[in-house]
Image (cartoon, rainbow, N blue to C red; front, side):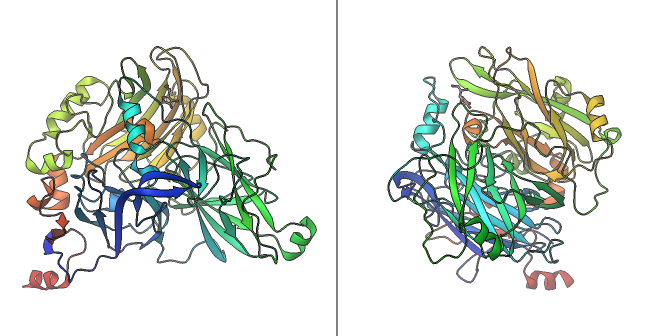
Length: 575
Ligand SMILES: O=C1O[C@H]([C@@H](O)CO)C(O)=C1O
């Protein structure tokens, strides 16, 4: 019997504890008020085991802000209220409360992930690396690994940024001040002072698995390493790929890649006459191009110089590569589950564009979605019997867009095979276009590619022929140009998804500013019956804000164990 209620009193030991605070913090030698996990940005690195349940306790130690924690890329494998999307899959954790997330990474999903708050702009600082360890040895051999998490620095506070983006008196967040590596960096290429670049230490002759994590709020980054001009991609978004050689990476907010890097030998270092090399990171597709640095350092009798920024970048300044690695990545392990075009039962074309009127918003199928839209979380409403997904489905089908504008849901039935096409269009009034890294919660989607103009099924089938699409959770809808005519198609990205995991799954642009400006959609997979059947009955403590599933300083929560049923229950089951 899943769903046993357990009082999480003092005897309960969560596997991990994350404490979220809002406080002044030092980054790039500037003080900024921000939301942190365990007092730092990035927060602690979490390691979970493939196939095993992890309980992660998240304390909201803030006075006046809600929080949720999302396990980016793992969300199909959480208990019903554990995906961490506010007002979609759970009531957010109220100030002074805590919530125990139950996360079970599925076998086959060992790889590189991250966690982050899903509330407002908090994820700019509130997040950290999440590695799912495999029960099996890696198919690739490497000596050691290093995590390289990229994030952005903004001088404005989250509140100023959110207010600016959502008020009639629109004001942009500003562009990123610096792209940071593991939370470290300097404001501009020629900044002076003692502020240090991040150092990634390696030893001569060893092979490293570099795990790159796109934890940026905004930045789409092209990245290369001085004198180390060839590495091999072996993982994308949690899945091993066949090896692909490349001289640079292009990584958006929400994406992860692992690459193998062969460190120079002692002899090669002698020849090069250097023991430190720059990582060069350039932002793409924004009005301002920013180039920032980190350092790859080898053991040296002379301390590595982390305060000098090269006056001239050692590598050429990168440009965007449209369709980078599209149709090129293939799964390492053969995957027979890829749905062909003939298997697609419904194609949902989602037109996305910016609308400039009294507010500046991003619309999908004509509507924005903000966490302020629902009065209560969809998933809660399903269990309360207040949300009729069959009626919503009928309205969505009748609309011709697969979208129900009453609930602002994209509802789907179990066992449908969806093709979801994100279609970029010029902004209303300005014709402006941008690149958007679209992220899908729930089970990973098959990425069937992207291109310029308008999606053309026949043309894309030709390109797909003979390739083996990979499953991803974040891929980029490119713009191809910065301007076109209002509502004119310019760029598309398409996914295929088998509807097998009942639940409420967000699909959204991972740029935090764009999310705040409405660039989010919510899919409901399965109707009420399917969702309830998957979880079994749920406790009422999940159905109200601050309910009894949420603990506080004087109250131990009543938590349902959906996967991890304590032993005594198994025993009472037998009776
Ligand atoms: O969403 C955005 O809004 C601004 C601009 O389009 C409106 O000023 C910008 O640069 C974005 O990426």
